[in-house]
Length: 228
Image (cartoon, rainbow, N blue to C red; front, top):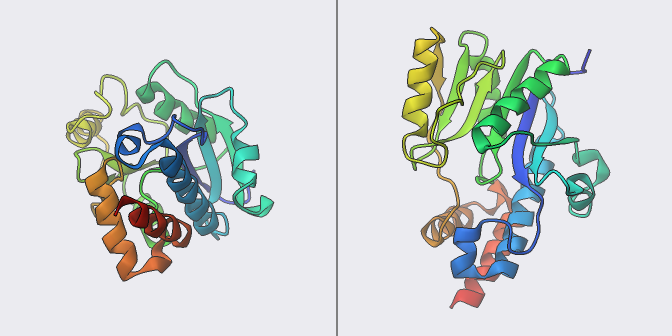
């Protein structure tokens, strides 16, 4: 049996030049965007690896990369957690498979989050875990109509037929849960960092409180100087 009953899975890409945050890279440039994404990974690892009630996992793509080695260059070995490649022909299948993976490892609960919102707090993860005491599904709505977090006690199929990366994802996921008679709890809404407007919004947030994501804050402030 695992030490914790809950797996926290961060969905991530292996940080390679030109392969991360491509929409944002059109404005910041591939090199600056890669550094920013590496900062995202750093902050998430440092925040969640020491968690007392969740075991940190990373579901990474592409599967041929050595994500653990890349992450170990950013953070101490004790903060790397468990890494496994994503499997499936599309994003929906890969998300579903991540839940199957943690269930096969005997975790009673799985909380899956995006790596696109480095401001996700430990408090939100705790709220998701607690909500699973009374609900089948927990969702963290994203402002773009998707979600930054999905948590379940079992690997329910809330993914097949959902047009991922559209503004209908959250609505259709809730509808699918209702069809399966699953109870749903919603967390606070957050924003992802996908485009330049999101980057500037993150910059304002971190200027007010750099401690939310210290590595990201340093990278953002440097990128802002270069944009001027």
